[in-house]
Image (cartoon, rainbow, N blue to C red; front, side, top):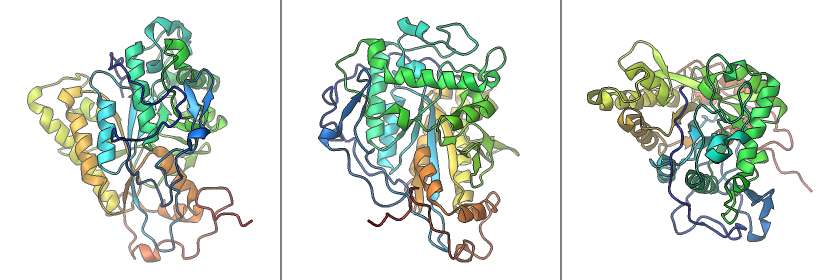
Length: 423
C-alpha cells in the first residue's frame, strides 16, 4: 500500500440537522434503507431526547446505531452466510466525491462498509503542529492535512455513513511507512499515542476548525472505534498489542488466505486476503493498490490503453475469490481500497461492479468489520474451530448438514447472540 494523497478541497457542508442533532435522522435525501447486517432484529434509532453532546460538541451520543441487526448463531447443520467486507483506507471526501458515491453504491446494493478515517483529515493545515507523530517532528505527515472545506465535507459523509449503518474505523494519522520512523518501528507506547491523537482529531474537529455551529458526528468515537488497518500493513505486531490493551476488537493489517478467521492477541484477525489474479500464475492481495503495482508499477497513471484491462483483472479476481468461497468454505471475503482515481479510476469501477455482482446474491451479507466481528462473537467456538479446518475453496465433503456440530454449546450470557436473561 502507498499513502493516499492529501485530501483536496471538498464541497461546503450544509447542516443536515440542528447543531444539537435533535431529530437528526435519515430522511428525504435518500440516505435511509435497510442494512443486511448479520442477523434479524434491529434496534430502533435513538429517540430525539437521547442526544448527548460530548466534549466540545464535535461528537455526540445518539443511542444505538440505526440499521444494525442482532447476530444469530448458526443452527446445527446450517450453511454459513457468505460475508463480504468492503473497506476504505484513509477515508475522506474530496473533490472526487468518491466517499459519497460509494455510500450510494452501498445503499443501492444492500451493503454496509467500513471507512478507515485518517485522523489528519480532520485537522486543518494551519493547526498541523498539534499533531506530534511518533519518531517525527511536530506537524509532519506523509499524506498532508486538510482545509476547513474538506473537513466539513468529510464530516458530512462520516455522519451520513454512520446513520446508514456503516462503521468508522481508523487509518491513524501521518501514514509513515518504511525505515526512519515508519510505523513498523513504533513501540507499543508509540502506537497508543498515535491512536490517542487519531481519536482526539475526531473528537475536537470543531475546536480545531472553529466550525462551532455545525452538527456533531452522531457517535461516541471512544466506543465506535474498535478496529483499524495500519499504513502499508506495517507495524502489526506492536499495534495489535496496543489495540488489545485499549479494548479494540479486530485488526485487518495482515495478509491471509481465504480461510475462516481466528483471534490473535485477543483481536479477530480479519486480514486482507489473497485472491486469483487473472492472467497470472500467482495470487494477488484483494486491494486496489496491490493490483495497480503489479500492473503499472508505482505509476498511478499508466498506459491509458490498458486501464480497462487492469480494472477488469481486479474485478474478475475479486469475483473469482468470492465464487470459490461462496461455493466452498464460505470464509468471509475481505477487500481493501482507497478513494483514488489510479489508472483512470479503473479500480473504482472494478469495486463498484463487484459490489453490484455479489451483494444481492442469496445468503450473501456485505457488512462492516464491526458486524462481522459481532457475528463471529455470537458463534459457538466449536463451530468456528470446525470451519477453520476447511481450506481455501474447500466445501464439506459430506455437505453442510453433517459438517457442523449437531448440539452447539449455549452462548455465554452477555455476548451477541446469547438468549435474553429471564427476569
